[in-house]
Length: 162
Length: 410
Image 1: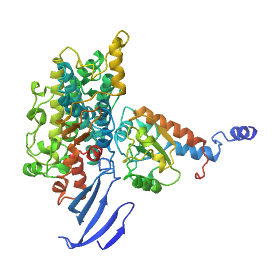
Image 2: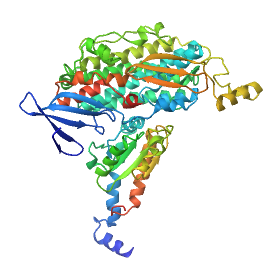
Image 3: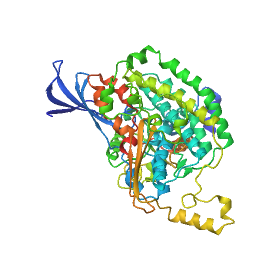
Image 4: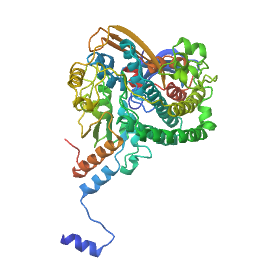
């Protein structure tokens, strides 16, 4: 690009980029999850933050107790019908832009529990960005899901989603 | 119930109209189900006088999974998979309770090597479960590094789970009739290393917490539960032993050959959160002792009962024997049937008496499977312990009860 080269030569300390890329780079590098442990997967979610798996490498170790400060909700475990309105409320309390990772078979589809008590997939009440299979998924699976989500964010615009 | 107002997100305060001891009115506040210090999705309705707890009512059911009902729709061998998932911090111990109950109905006894492997898995699980408790309780009381130390060792245990069963958490390793597979040489090596290393790791945890002035002032004298109350309210496990009652099902009603191992029942007369902490630390040390004995005296022999009606034939037999193919087919299409009757077996999990009651009507599916979960009953003393304590102490007390909400709600 001609203009870029001219600027780069004249002002070597300045980087030019698109605003979309810059904002999305910032967003993807500090995805703060809401502390929202439900069941077995929550234990693996905790294990993902430990020294061995080190979620902090991806800028996501800051689990926020308040949904107001969170960017991504990791639905870690089975969602019962009694829990569903609570979960939706927490999602609504999160500020835009927000993303949802459905962690594990139960959150994604109901898993082995096809019965009266469980919501057969959390995507019935909140929009899900990434699904993770497994019961529970390994910490590496969660890291992978996070990286997939980061790629998605990079490709998004900066305006709120419709 | 006169006036309701909202103070911040999700916290609703209701004035009760009752007069408190400090001149103010009693307020009812909602705590949970989404709260970082409730160990899952526990919801508490608390009546506060100033900052002191006057009444406390747990509201449960936010993780109700219908596991017991689900078990009625599964074949006997399939139920093992759902037993893993109720108390998700001690899957092999849940498996063991169910397997022992079914074996009682079938009238079979597993070979000694299977029993020893069951003990090994149970004790590893007990340590892993206590480690999660220690790590999360540490965070709640301000010692956030505890989680890093505890999860380091927990991951070692999960690696061993993976080595022996192929899965980190929900192993489904212990099954009616024996165990899933024999221990691999690598597993025994890993176990040996773990046993050597673990006592010094427990020393490390103790160095961080036992004499820590903040930890001590947050736990000593907090959440007192006298032995009488603990018994009346049905507490089991470290909750009961932390009140000085030496009741451990591994000693009092031994199963899986626990009577052959030399270990002490950890108790503490302090009756408070600190006492229960000491009990759990001691239990980890005792578990390591049991593991050492089990590993050194691991008997040779088969790990499953020799009954083709209950367990599938080995893979190599399928290629040569028609009968084996028929058994295999029958087992995986219809399952096995269990003689009509009922059985209750209780085992000691990290949380206390983990019982399983099964009813069979003689078919290939259970008529009823009921879990007596320790967490559910251990919620009962919560009000007794939290009475007249501050809200911040209540968090320490919830932590010390070590409830797993999956186990409470099932």
